[in-house]
Image (tube, rainbow, N blue to C red; front, side, top):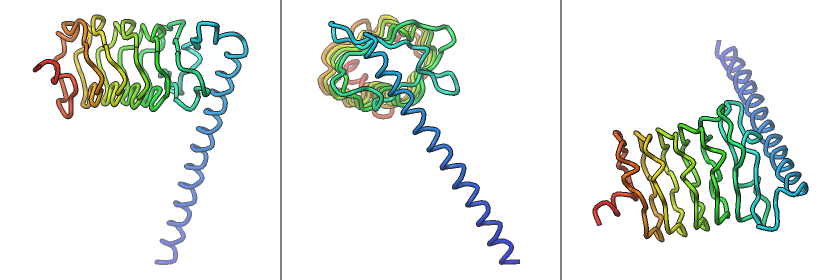
Length: 206
């Protein structure tokens, strides 16, 4: 009986290993494909004299239809990104959107229809100086670690956040250079806040 159980365990482990390898392989192929697409966009002039890389938002969605863009898809030297061409079918961002990227400026024009922002949105973008949040006018839920550790960010504007009702933890946490918050009244409809390690209350109380 013990031998049979061992055999079953080995088969189960083998199946798990195969499944894991398939997932890893699929992710590597996806990363390579997305990097290639970005490279072709640059070749075709999407990176112009203004030094802004313009991306077709619908091109970068995952299997669930979420907007997904990883920092490793950004070639060296690209510091300014604009997500263009909004699509009504894209209503959420995948976890880790541009996480740990070296970009300095990002325009979220293509996110006009997003209603839910996944965790780790622009997490750890230490060089990020400006981010246009005005296009997030339909967002109602913000995941954990939104703009976490964006230590070069100086100004944020919440005028378009009137539909936001839920904010999760580590919101604007460790944004050490943040000096100005414009239109804080844009958050007036927030009903649920995870106050764990919040960066925003510092400004509210001070």
